[in-house]
Image (cartoon, rainbow, N blue to C red; front, side, top):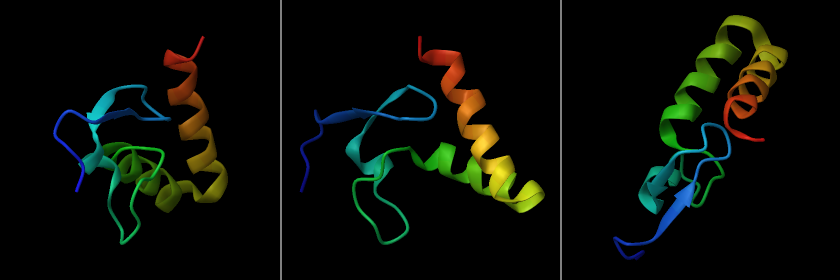
Length: 65
């Protein structure tokens, strides 16, 4: 079980969360947080795979230099 002090950066929004925010959907240690996963899934539902990819790229451009 991870310690409370262990943290990780979301690859989509760039925010730092505890490791428990990256364990969902019966898969541990994902690269993006639960919130970004929900937003990405909503984009995919509305516009398909390309919309989900565009969402990820747009969010990453905001924080990756």
